[in-house]
Length: 393
Image 1 (cartoon, rainbow, N blue to C red):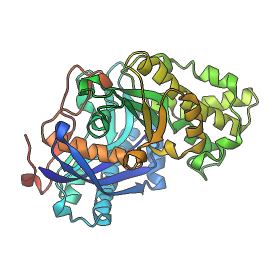
Image 2 (image 1 turned 90 degrees about the vertical axis):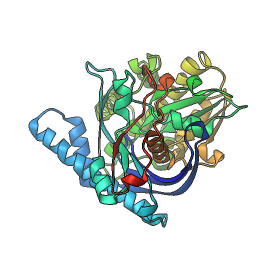
Image 3 (image 1 turned 135 degrees about the horizontal axis):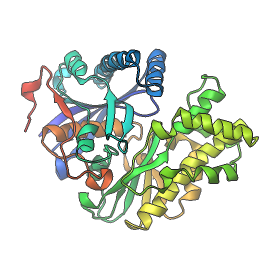
Protein backbone atom coordinates (compact mmCIF):
# COMPACT_ATOMS: atom_id res chain seq x y z
CA UNK A 1 0.00 0.00 0.00
CA UNK A 2 1.23 3.47 -0.87
CA UNK A 3 0.62 6.42 1.46
CA UNK A 4 1.50 10.10 1.57
CA UNK A 5 2.53 10.88 5.14
CA UNK A 6 3.56 14.12 6.84
CA UNK A 7 6.26 13.90 9.51
CA UNK A 8 6.69 16.66 12.12
CA UNK A 9 9.66 17.15 14.42
CA UNK A 10 10.97 19.72 16.86
CA UNK A 11 14.26 18.96 18.57
CA UNK A 12 16.00 19.95 21.76
CA UNK A 13 17.30 23.16 20.17
CA UNK A 14 13.67 24.40 20.15
CA UNK A 15 14.18 26.49 17.02
CA UNK A 16 10.93 25.49 15.34
CA UNK A 17 9.14 22.67 13.58
CA UNK A 18 10.53 20.60 10.72
CA UNK A 19 7.76 19.33 8.43
CA UNK A 20 8.21 16.75 5.69
CA UNK A 21 5.92 15.08 3.14
CA UNK A 22 7.01 11.59 2.11
CA UNK A 23 5.49 8.85 0.00
CA UNK A 24 5.77 5.47 1.75
CA UNK A 25 5.28 2.14 0.05
CA UNK A 26 5.00 -1.00 2.15
CA UNK A 27 6.08 -1.46 5.75
CA UNK A 28 8.70 -3.25 7.79
CA UNK A 29 11.75 -4.35 5.80
CA UNK A 30 9.82 -3.73 2.57
CA UNK A 31 9.33 -0.08 3.49
CA UNK A 32 10.41 2.42 0.83
CA UNK A 33 10.30 6.18 1.26
CA UNK A 34 10.40 8.97 -1.31
CA UNK A 35 10.67 12.61 -0.17
CA UNK A 36 7.96 14.89 -1.55
CA UNK A 37 8.46 18.15 0.35
CA UNK A 38 10.11 19.74 3.38
CA UNK A 39 10.07 23.03 5.25
CA UNK A 40 11.00 24.44 8.66
CA UNK A 41 8.53 26.65 10.56
CA UNK A 42 10.33 28.73 13.24
CA UNK A 43 8.77 29.06 16.67
CA UNK A 44 7.63 32.58 17.54
CA UNK A 45 9.95 34.21 20.06
CA UNK A 46 7.23 34.23 22.74
CA UNK A 47 6.73 30.48 22.38
CA UNK A 48 10.49 29.86 22.66
CA UNK A 49 10.59 31.95 25.81
CA UNK A 50 7.60 30.12 27.29
CA UNK A 51 9.18 26.76 26.53
CA UNK A 52 12.44 27.85 28.15
CA UNK A 53 10.54 29.05 31.22
CA UNK A 54 8.55 25.83 31.57
CA UNK A 55 11.55 23.60 31.04
CA UNK A 56 13.70 25.56 33.45
CA UNK A 57 11.19 25.82 36.28
CA UNK A 58 8.67 23.03 36.94
CA UNK A 59 6.35 22.51 39.85
CA UNK A 60 3.99 25.37 40.69
CA UNK A 61 0.30 25.50 39.77
CA UNK A 62 0.96 28.46 37.48
CA UNK A 63 3.62 26.44 35.69
CA UNK A 64 1.22 23.55 35.24
CA UNK A 65 -1.26 25.94 33.69
CA UNK A 66 1.45 27.15 31.31
CA UNK A 67 2.25 23.56 30.36
CA UNK A 68 -1.40 22.88 29.54
CA UNK A 69 -1.65 26.09 27.51
CA UNK A 70 1.60 25.31 25.70
CA UNK A 71 0.39 21.83 24.82
CA UNK A 72 -2.51 23.31 22.87
CA UNK A 73 -0.58 26.30 21.51
CA UNK A 74 2.06 23.94 20.16
CA UNK A 75 -0.69 21.73 18.75
CA UNK A 76 -1.92 24.73 16.75
CA UNK A 77 1.62 25.47 15.52
CA UNK A 78 2.28 21.86 14.54
CA UNK A 79 -1.04 21.87 12.66
CA UNK A 80 0.00 25.05 10.82
CA UNK A 81 3.29 23.39 9.90
CA UNK A 82 1.42 20.40 8.47
CA UNK A 83 -0.89 22.70 6.49
CA UNK A 84 2.12 24.69 5.31
CA UNK A 85 4.15 21.73 4.05
CA UNK A 86 1.13 20.27 2.27
CA UNK A 87 0.58 23.60 0.50
CA UNK A 88 4.29 24.00 -0.27
CA UNK A 89 4.46 20.51 -1.80
CA UNK A 90 1.25 21.20 -3.77
CA UNK A 91 -0.61 18.37 -2.08
CA UNK A 92 -4.26 18.49 -1.12
CA UNK A 93 -4.92 17.54 2.49
CA UNK A 94 -7.41 15.02 1.11
CA UNK A 95 -4.42 13.21 -0.41
CA UNK A 96 -2.59 12.98 2.93
CA UNK A 97 -3.32 9.71 4.74
CA UNK A 98 -1.46 10.28 8.00
CA UNK A 99 0.49 12.79 10.07
CA UNK A 100 3.23 11.61 12.43
CA UNK A 101 4.11 14.24 15.04
CA UNK A 102 6.98 13.88 17.48
CA UNK A 103 5.94 16.98 19.43
CA UNK A 104 8.23 19.10 21.61
CA UNK A 105 10.10 17.32 24.40
CA UNK A 106 9.94 19.37 27.60
CA UNK A 107 11.04 16.71 30.09
CA UNK A 108 12.84 13.42 29.67
CA UNK A 109 13.93 11.34 32.67
CA UNK A 110 14.29 7.70 31.62
CA UNK A 111 16.59 6.98 34.57
CA UNK A 112 14.71 8.98 37.20
CA UNK A 113 12.90 7.74 40.31
CA UNK A 114 9.90 7.31 38.04
CA UNK A 115 10.78 6.69 34.40
CA UNK A 116 8.97 9.37 32.44
CA UNK A 117 9.01 11.55 29.38
CA UNK A 118 6.77 14.39 28.21
CA UNK A 119 6.21 15.83 24.76
CA UNK A 120 3.85 18.74 24.09
CA UNK A 121 1.91 19.52 20.92
CA UNK A 122 -1.63 18.22 21.33
CA UNK A 123 -2.32 15.73 18.48
CA UNK A 124 -6.09 16.18 18.82
CA UNK A 125 -5.62 19.78 17.70
CA UNK A 126 -3.51 18.67 14.72
CA UNK A 127 -6.12 16.10 13.67
CA UNK A 128 -8.97 18.60 14.06
CA UNK A 129 -7.30 21.45 12.15
CA UNK A 130 -6.08 19.25 9.29
CA UNK A 131 -8.75 16.54 9.21
CA UNK A 132 -5.92 14.01 8.94
CA UNK A 133 -5.48 11.05 11.30
CA UNK A 134 -2.49 11.89 13.49
CA UNK A 135 -0.04 9.57 15.24
CA UNK A 136 1.88 11.24 18.06
CA UNK A 137 3.53 10.76 21.45
CA UNK A 138 5.91 8.03 20.31
CA UNK A 139 8.22 7.78 23.32
CA UNK A 140 5.96 6.68 26.23
CA UNK A 141 5.28 3.18 24.89
CA UNK A 142 8.98 2.41 24.89
CA UNK A 143 9.47 3.92 28.37
CA UNK A 144 6.52 1.88 29.64
CA UNK A 145 8.29 -1.22 28.30
CA UNK A 146 11.39 -0.36 30.33
CA UNK A 147 13.24 1.51 27.59
CA UNK A 148 14.90 4.91 27.53
CA UNK A 149 12.29 6.24 25.11
CA UNK A 150 15.20 7.35 22.95
CA UNK A 151 16.65 7.16 20.44
CA UNK A 152 13.66 6.12 18.31
CA UNK A 153 14.89 7.06 14.83
CA UNK A 154 17.37 4.10 14.61
CA UNK A 155 14.56 1.80 13.47
CA UNK A 156 14.01 4.11 10.50
CA UNK A 157 17.77 4.34 9.93
CA UNK A 158 17.80 0.55 9.65
CA UNK A 159 14.96 0.57 7.13
CA UNK A 160 16.53 3.28 4.96
CA UNK A 161 20.31 2.99 5.30
CA UNK A 162 21.27 -0.64 5.91
CA UNK A 163 23.89 -2.10 3.58
CA UNK A 164 24.87 -5.66 2.78
CA UNK A 165 28.55 -4.81 2.35
CA UNK A 166 29.32 -1.77 4.53
CA UNK A 167 29.07 -1.30 8.27
CA UNK A 168 27.61 2.17 8.62
CA UNK A 169 26.77 4.66 11.29
CA UNK A 170 24.15 7.36 10.85
CA UNK A 171 24.96 10.16 13.30
CA UNK A 172 22.56 12.96 14.12
CA UNK A 173 24.00 16.26 15.34
CA UNK A 174 20.96 18.00 16.76
CA UNK A 175 20.72 19.58 20.19
CA UNK A 176 21.84 16.16 21.42
CA UNK A 177 24.25 13.95 19.48
CA UNK A 178 23.28 10.34 18.80
CA UNK A 179 24.41 7.49 16.59
CA UNK A 180 22.92 4.43 14.92
CA UNK A 181 25.28 1.57 14.10
CA UNK A 182 24.20 -0.64 11.18
CA UNK A 183 26.50 -3.65 10.78
CA UNK A 184 26.93 -4.97 7.25
CA UNK A 185 24.15 -7.41 6.43
CA UNK A 186 22.75 -7.07 9.94
CA UNK A 187 19.22 -7.71 11.19
CA UNK A 188 17.22 -5.29 13.37
CA UNK A 189 18.48 -7.06 16.50
CA UNK A 190 22.07 -6.29 15.48
CA UNK A 191 21.58 -2.53 15.38
CA UNK A 192 23.22 -0.46 18.11
CA UNK A 193 22.12 3.09 18.91
CA UNK A 194 22.48 5.59 21.74
CA UNK A 195 23.09 9.24 22.61
CA UNK A 196 26.77 10.21 22.60
CA UNK A 197 26.28 13.46 24.56
CA UNK A 198 25.72 17.10 23.68
CA UNK A 199 25.38 18.06 20.04
CA UNK A 200 24.68 21.74 19.37
CA UNK A 201 23.00 22.44 22.71
CA UNK A 202 25.96 23.80 24.69
CA UNK A 203 27.36 25.70 21.72
CA UNK A 204 23.99 27.32 21.02
CA UNK A 205 23.58 28.32 24.67
CA UNK A 206 26.98 29.98 24.75
CA UNK A 207 26.38 31.85 21.48
CA UNK A 208 23.01 33.18 22.67
CA UNK A 209 24.63 34.51 25.86
CA UNK A 210 27.70 35.89 24.08
CA UNK A 211 25.59 37.79 21.54
CA UNK A 212 22.83 38.74 24.02
CA UNK A 213 20.29 36.83 21.98
CA UNK A 214 21.20 38.36 18.62
CA UNK A 215 22.38 34.96 17.38
CA UNK A 216 20.92 31.57 18.22
CA UNK A 217 23.76 29.44 16.89
CA UNK A 218 27.32 29.55 15.58
CA UNK A 219 26.41 29.59 11.90
CA UNK A 220 28.97 27.58 9.96
CA UNK A 221 31.19 27.39 13.06
CA UNK A 222 32.64 30.81 12.20
CA UNK A 223 32.90 31.92 15.83
CA UNK A 224 34.43 28.70 17.12
CA UNK A 225 37.04 28.78 14.37
CA UNK A 226 38.28 32.06 15.84
CA UNK A 227 38.89 30.43 19.21
CA UNK A 228 41.42 27.96 20.62
CA UNK A 229 40.43 24.83 22.50
CA UNK A 230 41.42 24.85 26.18
CA UNK A 231 42.86 21.35 26.56
CA UNK A 232 42.71 21.27 30.36
CA UNK A 233 39.06 22.28 30.55
CA UNK A 234 38.18 19.82 27.79
CA UNK A 235 39.78 16.99 29.78
CA UNK A 236 37.72 17.97 32.82
CA UNK A 237 34.49 18.18 30.80
CA UNK A 238 35.09 14.70 29.40
CA UNK A 239 34.91 13.38 32.99
CA UNK A 240 31.17 14.08 33.06
CA UNK A 241 29.44 10.92 34.38
CA UNK A 242 27.26 10.55 31.29
CA UNK A 243 30.25 9.74 29.09
CA UNK A 244 31.09 6.73 31.27
CA UNK A 245 27.61 5.19 31.04
CA UNK A 246 27.17 2.07 28.95
CA UNK A 247 24.34 1.92 26.39
CA UNK A 248 21.42 1.96 26.32
CA UNK A 249 21.67 5.59 27.31
CA UNK A 250 19.99 8.86 26.44
CA UNK A 251 20.33 12.43 27.63
CA UNK A 252 18.89 15.89 27.08
CA UNK A 253 18.47 19.39 28.37
CA UNK A 254 18.28 18.12 31.95
CA UNK A 255 22.02 17.29 31.83
CA UNK A 256 23.45 19.55 29.11
CA UNK A 257 21.05 22.51 29.03
CA UNK A 258 21.36 26.08 30.27
CA UNK A 259 22.30 25.04 33.81
CA UNK A 260 25.32 23.24 32.35
CA UNK A 261 26.11 26.27 30.18
CA UNK A 262 25.96 28.61 33.20
CA UNK A 263 28.37 26.39 35.15
CA UNK A 264 30.67 26.18 32.13
CA UNK A 265 30.78 29.98 31.84
CA UNK A 266 31.70 30.33 35.51
CA UNK A 267 34.51 27.81 35.10
CA UNK A 268 35.70 29.62 32.00
CA UNK A 269 35.85 32.96 33.83
CA UNK A 270 37.72 31.39 36.76
CA UNK A 271 40.30 29.97 34.35
CA UNK A 272 40.53 33.24 32.40
CA UNK A 273 39.31 31.65 29.17
CA UNK A 274 38.14 34.04 26.44
CA UNK A 275 34.52 33.59 25.26
CA UNK A 276 35.55 32.43 21.77
CA UNK A 277 37.99 29.94 23.28
CA UNK A 278 35.22 28.65 25.53
CA UNK A 279 33.00 28.18 22.48
CA UNK A 280 35.77 26.33 20.67
CA UNK A 281 36.17 24.09 23.73
CA UNK A 282 32.42 23.36 23.82
CA UNK A 283 32.58 22.47 20.12
CA UNK A 284 35.50 20.16 20.82
CA UNK A 285 33.47 18.52 23.62
CA UNK A 286 30.81 17.45 21.11
CA UNK A 287 33.45 16.02 18.78
CA UNK A 288 35.50 14.31 21.49
CA UNK A 289 32.50 12.74 23.22
CA UNK A 290 31.19 11.43 19.90
CA UNK A 291 34.54 9.88 18.99
CA UNK A 292 34.86 8.35 22.47
CA UNK A 293 31.41 6.80 22.10
CA UNK A 294 32.51 5.00 18.94
CA UNK A 295 35.73 3.75 20.50
CA UNK A 296 34.18 2.67 23.82
CA UNK A 297 30.88 1.24 22.67
CA UNK A 298 30.98 0.49 18.93
CA UNK A 299 34.48 -0.54 17.87
CA UNK A 300 35.16 -2.50 21.06
CA UNK A 301 31.74 -4.16 21.35
CA UNK A 302 29.81 -4.14 18.10
CA UNK A 303 32.33 -4.20 15.28
CA UNK A 304 34.20 -2.09 12.76
CA UNK A 305 32.76 1.06 11.20
CA UNK A 306 33.43 1.58 7.51
CA UNK A 307 31.62 4.89 7.09
CA UNK A 308 29.80 7.48 9.19
CA UNK A 309 27.21 9.82 7.70
CA UNK A 310 26.18 12.90 9.67
CA UNK A 311 22.74 14.53 9.73
CA UNK A 312 21.22 17.40 11.70
CA UNK A 313 22.20 21.05 11.97
CA UNK A 314 25.67 20.29 13.35
CA UNK A 315 26.80 18.92 10.00
CA UNK A 316 26.78 22.53 8.72
CA UNK A 317 29.19 23.65 11.46
CA UNK A 318 32.57 23.60 9.72
CA UNK A 319 34.52 23.87 12.98
CA UNK A 320 32.69 20.88 14.44
CA UNK A 321 33.03 18.77 11.29
CA UNK A 322 36.75 19.53 11.06
CA UNK A 323 37.17 18.38 14.66
CA UNK A 324 35.12 15.25 14.02
CA UNK A 325 37.21 14.34 11.00
CA UNK A 326 40.38 14.70 13.11
CA UNK A 327 38.93 12.66 15.97
CA UNK A 328 37.44 9.92 13.78
CA UNK A 329 40.43 8.31 12.09
CA UNK A 330 38.86 4.85 11.87
CA UNK A 331 36.11 5.45 9.27
CA UNK A 332 35.15 7.47 6.23
CA UNK A 333 33.20 10.58 7.30
CA UNK A 334 30.44 12.06 5.15
CA UNK A 335 26.96 13.56 5.36
CA UNK A 336 23.62 11.88 4.60
CA UNK A 337 23.37 13.99 1.44
CA UNK A 338 26.06 11.65 0.10
CA UNK A 339 23.39 8.92 0.26
CA UNK A 340 20.72 11.07 -1.38
CA UNK A 341 18.92 12.25 1.77
CA UNK A 342 18.29 15.72 3.21
CA UNK A 343 20.01 16.00 6.58
CA UNK A 344 17.61 18.72 7.69
CA UNK A 345 14.47 16.77 6.79
CA UNK A 346 15.53 13.30 7.89
CA UNK A 347 14.14 13.31 11.44
CA UNK A 348 10.76 14.69 10.39
CA UNK A 349 10.65 12.08 7.62
CA UNK A 350 11.45 9.42 10.22
CA UNK A 351 8.35 10.23 12.26
CA UNK A 352 6.26 9.96 9.10
CA UNK A 353 7.66 6.44 8.70
CA UNK A 354 6.99 5.62 12.37
CA UNK A 355 3.40 6.82 11.97
CA UNK A 356 2.98 4.51 9.00
CA UNK A 357 4.44 1.61 10.98
CA UNK A 358 2.06 2.33 13.86
CA UNK A 359 -1.12 2.06 11.80
CA UNK A 360 0.25 -1.14 10.27
CA UNK A 361 0.70 -2.56 13.78
CA UNK A 362 4.48 -2.80 13.36
CA UNK A 363 6.90 -2.34 16.25
CA UNK A 364 8.90 0.87 15.96
CA UNK A 365 11.55 0.59 18.67
CA UNK A 366 14.78 -1.39 18.71
CA UNK A 367 15.59 -3.11 21.99
CA UNK A 368 19.30 -2.72 21.30
CA UNK A 369 18.82 1.04 21.07
CA UNK A 370 16.46 1.84 23.93
CA UNK A 371 16.85 -1.15 26.26
CA UNK A 372 13.13 -1.91 26.23
CA UNK A 373 12.00 -5.36 27.35
CA UNK A 374 10.21 -5.95 24.06
CA UNK A 375 9.38 -4.46 20.71
CA UNK A 376 6.26 -2.27 20.91
CA UNK A 377 4.08 -0.26 18.55
CA UNK A 378 4.94 3.40 19.07
CA UNK A 379 2.54 6.32 19.03
CA UNK A 380 -1.03 7.19 19.90
CA UNK A 381 -3.49 7.36 17.04
CA UNK A 382 -5.92 10.29 16.97
CA UNK A 383 -8.52 9.82 14.20
CA UNK A 384 -9.08 12.68 11.80
CA UNK A 385 -11.97 13.16 9.44
CA UNK A 386 -10.22 10.80 7.01
CA UNK A 387 -10.19 8.04 9.64
CA UNK A 388 -12.17 5.52 7.60
CA UNK A 389 -9.58 5.83 4.84
CA UNK A 390 -6.76 4.73 7.11
CA UNK A 391 -6.10 1.05 7.57
CA UNK A 392 -5.72 0.23 11.25
CA UNK A 393 -4.76 -3.16 12.63
